[in-house]
Length: 156
Image (cartoon, rainbow, N blue to C red; front, side):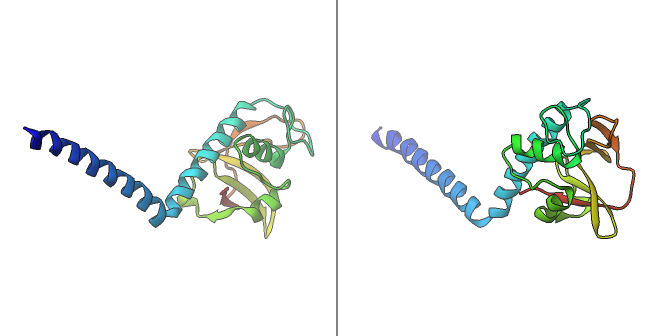
């Protein structure tokens, strides 16, 4: 009778140890996976924040909370999501990890460029669309990516 009592207790202890070993080992062996998960969480939050600003007017040099230029919207959205970005689109491009268009995910940044100069930034919304603050006289809105001259960056 006592063997039956101790056996489940032993399995419970072994099971707990195995789960702890797996959790510790996974984070130690695959730090990139943990970083990717954290980046995805911040990016998803930033995307939702940008979308919540739909209709906010464009204003050159503005970084929220009620008016934005393009990089001001990305700066504001990621700041609210817990990540710090530099002020301009070019500086933001320089600070992100490069990713290919095939690896882009909602929440990644989309940089529009002419030659080597970045002139506009938005947050990828999926389906070939971005949230952005386009230009004077316009408002924050979701739009189709209109150019093939784009680079993608992930905020880490």
